[in-house]
Length: 225
Image (cartoon, rainbow, N blue to C red; front, side):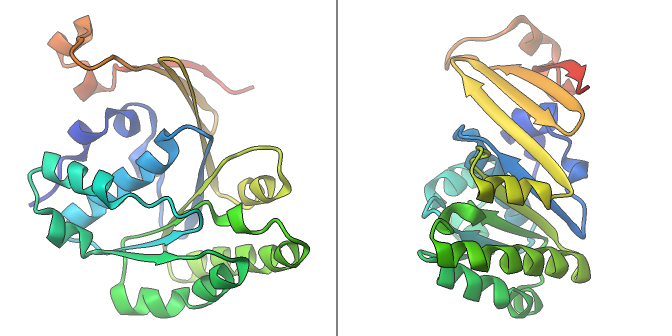
């Protein structure tokens, strides 16, 4: 049984092209919005409910199994079975992250994941030792992604900090999500979209006309200059 991911997360299907997550490519989803990790959780949900394994590396202790479990239930699947396909490794120091990335090939060989995700890869590398480690780690991750034909998605806060800039500079695709009040802005490459969140219990006119199924909950504003 295939999961209908469209109905569980109209933001991704309305504003972020899921076909853009290509094998052998590194995608960065950046921003301070909670929708950044939520997007990762939905990607993991889609893969797990399609009976595909996922490797998730957590660099900020931000993986939320309850969010994934709720999303799995909404799709009509059993949470325990789906969560068992999401293999989580948490790093609390830069040295632990280094060891996890170095062991990534072995983990991929063991689980053959559809998706590799890393939550806030650069978060741990603020010390001088961390700065020395980060460049080789990022290079290792990109080479592993390309040589093993992986779909790799990394999150970042996307600020002016050198680590965030370095992650974005090495990515094949950068998606930025900004959220202010009820307005969500999604910059996906050359495409800029605006999404208006609707409070629970309220309905828009286009909801009566299949708007979310057609991606009409997002307005494309412009192509980037």
